[in-house]
Image 1 (tube, rainbow, N blue to C red):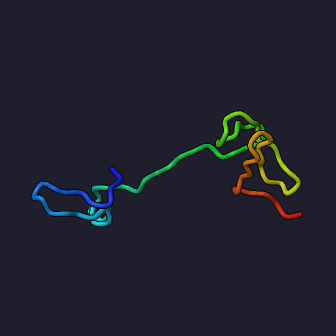
Image 2 (tube, rainbow, N blue to C red):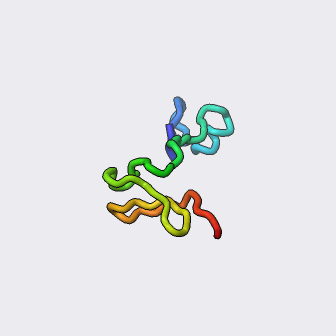
Image 3 (tube, helix red, strand yellow):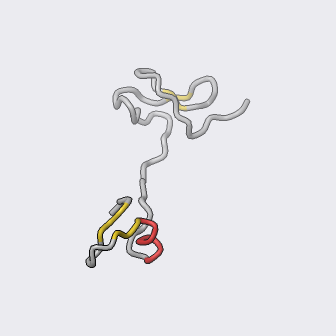
Length: 73
């Protein structure tokens, strides 16, 4: 349940922050596998990610560049 406002049993508007503090609503968890060289591109689904000259993962098909890393040289 991830809502900005929720109506409870007594028709009072309760914010999602109040529900979180009451323990009735947990934080939204988005889980995904970390990107690695050779993984399928998360944008186009066609290319395989590989490192570019800046050590960032890049898709040769659509040009997507990962912002999850890279390295300084």
